[in-house]
Amino acid sequence: MKILGEERRKYILQLLKDSNVPITGGDIAEKTNVSRQVIVGDITLLKAKNEPIIATSQGYIFLKQSSGIPMVERTIACKHTPKETETELNLIVDHGVLVKDVKIEHAVYGDLTAAIMVSNRQEVKQFVKRLQTTKASLLSELTGGVHLHTISASSEKALEKAEAALKAEGILLEA
Image (cartoon, rainbow, N blue to C red; front, side, top):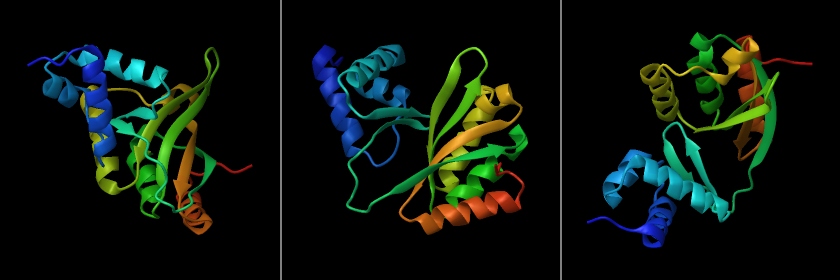
């Protein structure tokens, strides 16, 4: 049975709040018996009401309040080829660090940011597989491989270790 309008959006919001893993638009569409495009519209309306929902390569995530563990984050600059993407992300997540997003400075559009939200090798593998199956381009391909990541962890030490690993691999850009 099709779930309509506001009732469907309440259902979607609860579904995302209750989930500890990303949920694809297709999965939500199947559960609510509407098209994926209707779900995209619903998510847009929920975001317009300031619901903390982000779209990642693995699906939609509701950003839950911190579990009491203070997180630290920083922005890092990287440069690598598309083939080195999986290596870069694994070097970061292997140190218990979340890769929140990727940012580039585009000559026409200015700053462009896309959510990544990967925190372990399985999520990195899914991200890379999705790139391959969709044949999508990386944002960094528009800037000769140069890009920024917002990274987050429970300690400065974890961030420092991830940066050191990237530096050793020649991926981290330094001033």
